[in-house]
Length: 114
Length: 110
Image (cartoon, rainbow over all chains, first blue to last red; front, side):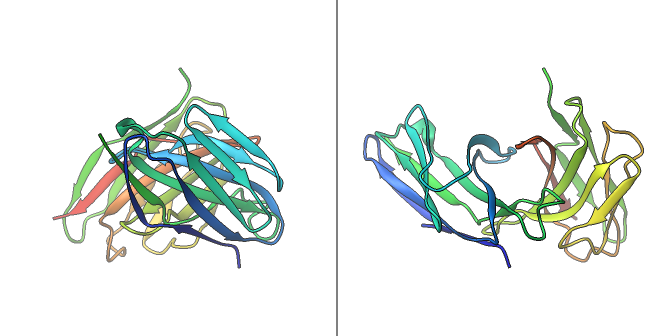
């Protein structure tokens, strides 16, 4: 069964204090791993898609990396406006391949204090 | 700008009442999805539709119903059979490799 686990559940950082969020996954063949940002009361906003181990993508202070078992979202010198919940989701080949069904982790809530 | 519009933003339901959540997209996407989000849990799939006039149950379809009469529209009805409907509901659509979410509807039972 496809499964996604994110850690930590919550993370508090001081402005400028770099850190990483983890997304561990179990899937029968990975078609894609997705990172989203979600602000309170709003829908998820797309950040990155990663397709194969070793792939990296960057956007401003965020960098996503992928291995065969997990993905990291690295946040460099975060600012208060980076505070949000970050969601990880996978799309696998088995079961979900024809439905486009994303399997989501429970999210990591990041708070960056000035 | 293309996107997904969900309405209303907030919805209150009385016990035993059916309510319908609207989801409209102008992205020309074939596939559309309804997810439910509860605090501390990942998004869970309720229903999905890959083409007009066809839809499939997701993981937690009991107490919900949908229709897909037009490509642009995928409304979700929360029926009285759904015993714990208070949640944040998200609609999404999918094109090649990409998923777009709406801004959500927060449903509360009063």
